Image (tube, rainbow, N blue to C red):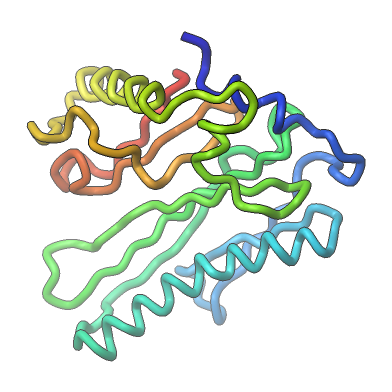
Length: 212
């Protein structure tokens, strides 16, 4: 089976003169807090930069507002809160894909352990628009959700066997695709399973490369 990605590449190859390669990405801290770090993206187009960085700020503020809500309305004392990011694809393979993976963590007083999760943001650097699952299922020749799901199930089982991960008995077959996916620097497509989604907390966040 060809890489799932190949169904999308034609539409994602650079086709506009304004796109000039990888973006420049700088790190910034929220209100000087070095535990909460987010990216600031520069593509060379001010309007597109604004669209992209607004979406990043929405990611940041969603995390911050969640902390305030828990403290104010649920009377949960926040002992620690962290946010960091890594970049998957940044114009890799002459595409317009920018994939950012955020890791967010919060630890409340009385909790047995911190709650940690990952959230992805896939962006088209030629337009500033977000790239959802439709870029895998609709763009170019497209592939069906069922095809992607079958590929993901196989790769998840292979990873569990290889890394001795315990999966919940009811984890497979998958009812739905995970909400978060991204492209890496080799243009492989990764899906992310959060803690408790298909396995116990001790198994951690599970990242599955369906093109490996």
